[in-house]
Length: 452
Image (cartoon, rainbow, N blue to C red; front, side, top):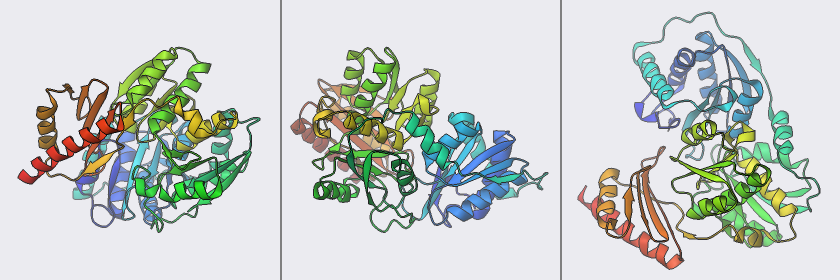
């Protein structure tokens, strides 16, 4: 079973047993073998309950399509990106990131973690839906199968990319949310001059403590409390597949991902002056200002890892950051990794005598709303209404959904690539102006929604 709704702009995500199942995973494997047209692929999965049978069915389909499989077992998504680069193979990660337990999905990459194209995803969907409806062709000569644990290589590679020598000892809270950060963080921290204070490190796809989505403030509360109670220097909160990481300072305050983007960008520009930094349409304007002040160049991408990775590759960018806490590194095959971003923060803090709140203050210039999600029946109608009403106050553009820009403020509305939500982000010079703009936009959305 394959419901076409599972095919998203950047990946596959859907409810197991309702929108897709093992037979659908097998059909996807057969389709993948044909569309990718490679001799071998590396496949891994996260800790979701449905992960083992989805991975098995998908790999069986791939092998029946004549393609060999390297089974990397349990891995974070950035662990799969690493395996792809390290082994020089295309890769598939069985994951649904931060979605609820009943979901599962797939993320894809080409050799050396390069992004797949939108056309690849369209061709895969078309072929898989055809196989699901009409049946798969008879198996060809089966591809080979081998298992490979790349976690030790992942740890060695990550820690080689950041200067962690001579850092002062740090106390670090890590909240894995029962996701894949619980698999990677202990292995990485074993070699660091840091005390790991773990929260929910045990892998549990039912997410019994909180949902593994650090974009939602309620999912950061436990880490904030732990920092204050233990006197930790910072906290790192991972999403379910651990490719994103939110940072919390020693006071228990959340550090904006845009601030982290600016801080890492300055560090990367110090070792490669004039380099290119990629941001997306909802990254703070302060990042562009800071990067340009330090001699770097900024290019803007649509939201989403396939778009960001493609632009990173085409522009040979040294680093990229999204306001959703995805951080991309040229040295990490141009892919996103929450763990490497966390190590950059540890390096900067460990080589400084300042607390993290003081260290990051210089990289924060504007107030922001954070992401505010609304469930609506007609996202485009809502965006059109907001565009009409705010046109007199600012410049209306459609770079990735709607963005209205005024003097020292902007408001962005875009449909989610993965969920039936309309996402609002607002930035302004002061918190009061942010609150005013949020209130105006949410009121307009509510008025339009009432008509539907």
